[in-house]
Length: 302
Ligand SMILES: Nc1ncnc2c1ncn2[C@@H]1O[C@H](COP(=O)(O)OP(=O)(O)OP(=O)(O)O)[C@@H](O)[C@H]1O
Image (cartoon, rainbow, N blue to C red):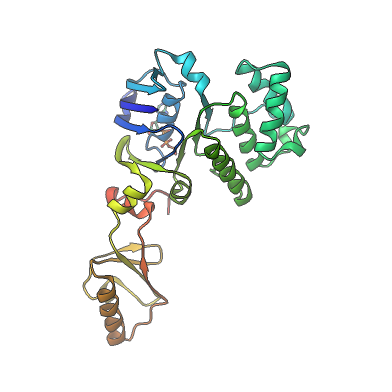
């Protein structure tokens, strides 16, 4: 349903995207993951028809986002990373303003506003000015503004940055509702666990280049090496019986093809050295670990 084909974009000398291609089937959720500056927002803006100056092609429902821009814009609800609201107006007046921009008015608009206010959990606060809202409420209203025209493709650029856990959960349930109603979701984040939880497929992007793409389960399976996680105040890399290991958080990930055998070997080594780990467990690599293995880069500032 959405085909991104060999998309490249430069800002002056800086190459923000290089030859990026992927496909998103209709009614599925797609996660775009990468560290700050990887190029996520640039792809989101190009997909949404906000940035038109790029090389390559994007086709949504058999229509080019550049050649049939007006048609494809109607299909898309774009939620930018920066909250874009008129703070001096109420939540409802903001929705009216955005509804008008999407060509909605009268009864139809008011009907949609009622539905969207419930969807984003702000029905009770409809008549309150945005200046009185928390960061999470503003983000939810920002999402609501992009849903009024019932888009079939919802593009969410880092919707959970800098918000409280309650609003984060509320945004997850909005995404799940949209999925259930058959929308196609494009969700960018540098929070891997969110994407792992919410998305059917995933693309990993680093320095403007797509480094992995596929169905979530396939990507996890493809890179899933058996591991043991070990941590302890007096444990160092030298105590790991010469096995391949890398630092993770306050401990180490030990890679092995024979986890039980290696576990036994580690226990023996710790006993000999009289070391006492406080964690020693089998570990399933997560997207975050896969990204680190592929790029040597952490997704978040440590
Ligand atoms: N308008 C612009 N002019 C010049 N450079 C830009 C512009 N927009 C983005 N860039 C640069 O392009 C690169 C990709 O930026 P982009 O915003 O797409 O990354 P991102 O993955 O969304 O990062 P973040 O998570 O920090 O928003 C960065 O190096 C950024 O500084």
